[in-house]
Image 1 (cartoon, rainbow, N blue to C red):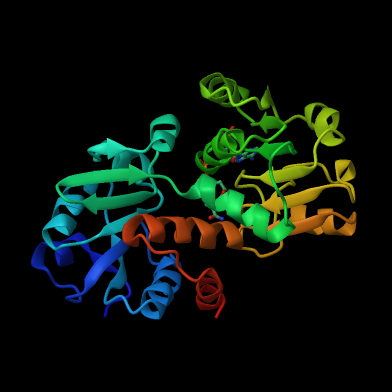
Image 2: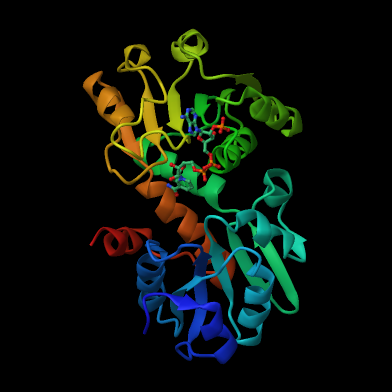
Length: 292
Ligand code: NAP
């Protein structure tokens, strides 16, 4: 069993006979998805192997047709293929149509179906980590114009949050997103990411979600100024490496409840798993597999 397979391996059928699920990306060797999905498959006695396949940009369509020929059930899609994957699908879920990116592909009969599990994964993560029901809550999403942020914002709107504040450095992206959201009764505001704009909403929100990439590197500035954080906030950072970002550290120091993106990673994986197999996997086992 190789750590990473290639499209040549798919062409030659040089994979384990029961390789039926995969994550594709470029690069993909860092992905922890195989550990958590394999643990869930094994626990349910499903005779399938989940592999990593490195696919160069421009080759996603060929990858999908090779996978179908080999009897794959589906795959996860990571950077940079989420847009290209969507373009190679026959049918898209409502969320993919809205977001323009797919992270879960299901080969079903003759069809390639595209879905996105990031938004539902985040909602389950918030419910699990903070014991929250989202209905009526006031939530600020930082980086709501990025791929993950858009998925999160769209799902929170669907869940019937009370108020949604969608912040992004490039404010046009959240203005456009806001216009496209369904009318679910949620009050939605688009804003930039200046200190003044963030200060103005800091007392008006219960939950702050970081979906920017700020915090992945030690030298990154905080995506939200520390002085506006308080013990009344619940702060979720979609980043899970490092486990404690500067934002989470600052929030904890000010008495806020905090959680990192590991739970989102696990729950979005669990949503994908259910799309492929129709079975709910054991998320505790998935967490152990990914943390071990
Ligand atoms: P993306 O599409 O590239 O979006 C990046 C976002 O960060 C954009 O909103 C961007 O703003 C903003 N940003 C980047 N640099 C900034 C800066 N210096 N100042 C202010 N804003 C900045 O990336 P993505 O795929 O959405 O991922 C975003 C984060 O979510 C990453 O840290 C990723 O690891 C995490 N994530 C976690 C999970 C999980 O399962 N836990 C899943 C997906 C993503 P502009 O639009 O203005 O460029």
